[in-house]
Length: 436
Image (cartoon, rainbow, N blue to C red; front, side, top):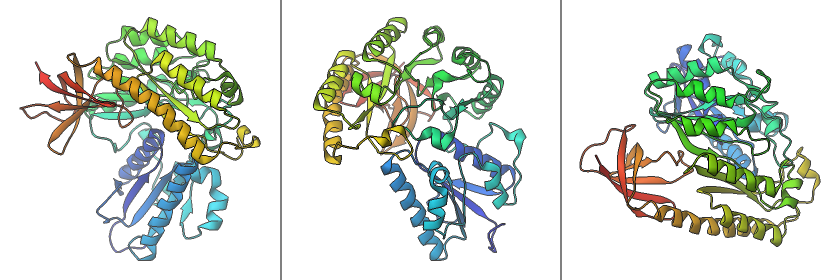
């Protein structure tokens, strides 16, 4: 039922968590717009009367942020500034019953796969023909594209399968159509996301089909960069590397979360891979795609982790010298198999270990960036901030990686590519001048 308001409804969508959630919000926005409902993302003007909070339930901090955001919106509702507050996303999927009992002021709760039910609240129809059409919340020149939903892995620490279900691939034709529409809107870079990229196609094509998808996307005229996020290391399909090497518009960039490097921890995390196998895979990747940027994510403080395990992880970083590293502290998630273990690493120790590991990486990152001084790179201009242009090389993804501060006498269109000669390098950022 529509909110009772004299004015036409205006919906604000607040997105928390990962880029996969962002895509879900964009799809919801596209459906609302197609039903002639006014919709905005992260609206600061407060001229809307309905809010949809798209929550994250991945780890404790994310859950706390989601709950606080819901409470903040309910406070606005209490003051008469909002008519309705709806909640969707992973936290809602996982704890809907408990949350509805604890926070009854929310008008309705929805899971991750209940888009048609959300639309019913607005007396709106789910338009199947709009499959893949979205109202982008990112700048016009880049977009995320979700190639599958869910995950069949059984990592002991991860609650994502509980919130997103089993792996379901989207057909290649559908993804190519969506990518063509995005390019027609001015998108230069598409970032492929999934819970697990390398599993793509096993369910619908009975084989790992990411290489075929990459070739099909790389054939799209005007698509300048294709970037790969969230590849799983176990049974990694090596044919992907040939496609990355052969196709100019596929970034020499691979985001492959490894989580740890100690065999004890990898086994406890149920990662289905050993340290020796990871070593071999990393060497193979770099051998087959010279100059590739490798990004990984790690976990500090998993149950039973010792100082010896941490030292093993530091040594692993020093040996392989990843270009980019992110780190989480372990979050004890109910209904995961790790929840049966004793969460025996104190919070402050988890934090300290994470900091120590990142200090090792910070030094590696600084040294790698210094090697770029004097070299020229193709850079995508992302934005102008505080009077200076900021961009990225093909070795950097949005928000999580390095930025390039671009010095230019001339105006640079946002979303354009320029050649930049690097003049200065820092731990995580570069500076350079535009050259012809």
